[in-house]
Image (cartoon, rainbow, N blue to C red):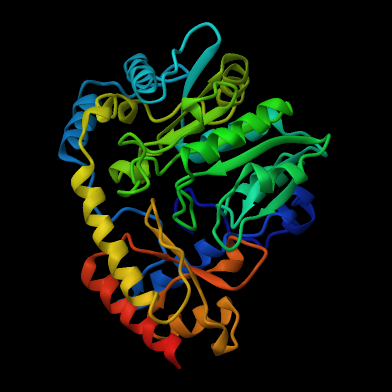
Length: 393
């Protein structure tokens, strides 16, 4: 026996009997299963992962190192370090016209996922309903379920737009929240300013919280920007929760940094839950991104627009594909002449080393697959060639 090690004994603890119904009700992410598969494959063509393939800007790296070396490594206040919250407030004032004050608040969170969880915990109770778009971001339904709520899916096929006209018939007395994601994951759809304003007006008039998930607001392509910016319901309404982040826009997904802004009473409830869960977002990294809003992303966005053209040039010749207007995803329909579900098609693609995600991970339908073009051009081109060939058969 190794010194200090406990002797090996067969476990007598029945973990299965200890696991609660809440845990059993949540299925593992289909995306995570593909990631695990990729780790075991030799030289895969990975078009599945929603992670930018560009490095963190050097300015942010240096700022992070400086913060660590300056011993800013302890807890921050739950709401976030002062210099970052001040920068966010300036950004909101400039971008959407919000003035953070007595009635509006800001909280820095552990990624936008942290903001979504804190919002759900603050608003959704047992039996409450939350409307999400179908297709949805993979985390939305489990977040609602973890809080005891019920997911109500809003069918947005074939154009993937969560409009007020589609949402209104689904509003019921137990509806607490509507989640909008623009630019969309998994579809790349960008709603217009008019569409978002109408949705915000509907929610406000019915006493329902609109959560605007804008994690990809830095990736909106020419033709979908309005006044040079990503459309946002926050430009016309204040009675909503705005969620944005840093990981996707600046390539620092592992830093786990996001923020939420909205009515102060709601932000205070979210801060209470953060205090007893995440405590705070990583302190030195909060300091590192305080100057991030001054960075110019235009060259990166232009590069991704070129990749979008690569995707559309290939996929539009063999199937239906709504052109992505933002983010770095395309939601591609499996041609009906193949007689296959998206899951079956994805299995064929994986057999040829191309990793994509079946639409059933994001939707009640299994007719599409998500393709991420956050991949080097050569890999993307190779993967598109294989998908093109598989769709022709």
